[in-house]
Amino acid sequence: VNSEDYIGKFSDCFPKYPRSNLVFSRIGVNQNIFCPKGTKIADLEKHLRDEDKGKLANIKQAVTFVGKFADWKRLDAVLYAAQKYEAEFPDLATMIVGSGPPEAIELYEGLAKKLELKRTFFLGPKGQDVLAELFSASEVGMFPSYKEPFGMVFIECAACGTPTIGANSGGPTEFVTDDIGVLVDEVDNWREEAGAKKLGESVAEQVSKALKEDWKGKTKGFSCVPFVTASYSTSAQCDGMLHNMMEWS
Image (cartoon, rainbow, N blue to C red; front, side, top):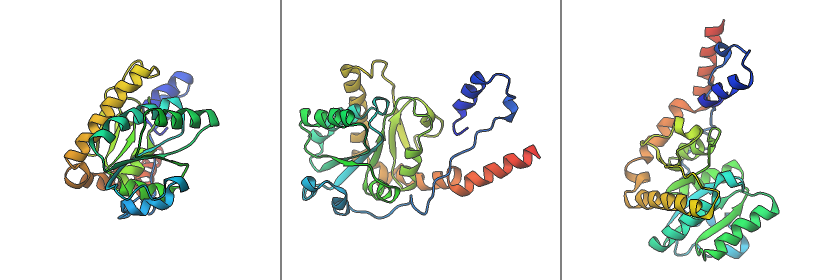
């Protein structure tokens, strides 16, 4: 299983299966793809929709969300957060990567318009090479999912030298530490507008801290790549699997 939490869940589903045969196998990230690219804000224009090209002229910083348009990914909270920090940082842009069924796209893009977001850009789904560029150019990655099974996007973002903001539930609780990011408190009523706004306020507060304290350049950013290399690189994954096989043989 790829999360320690799932060992217990698997055992609950299959109680007769020997628990001693279950191991936590870390997922490995390809650091030939996900690594600091030196990407600048101006380099991101080619990934924008045609109608948004030319809108980065006054943008100096960016933050990025990546995820499918499903309620538990909580993109609505990210958009409420953007409403807060856009007012505080006029040179900050938000890059939204992902997609979903037409009704979900309409829902979230409609919410962005309702909130009158001026510097929030919907890029659609993107491949790994583009994600690496976006993470490299961003100050932080924002992934406030509810009980994310693991959270590979956190690892991919950190591999590019960029700190992350998530929610204190699911897989990210096993590896996101203060050295590389932060997890905001969960909100019980997150499916309601009031709850989504409350979560958004917490995310916005951390984005503000990240920019003011320069997490990427002065504190957390320096720890991100070494953390991934030591624990979540493909070589670390293979070493762990070989160790498990040696124990079983």
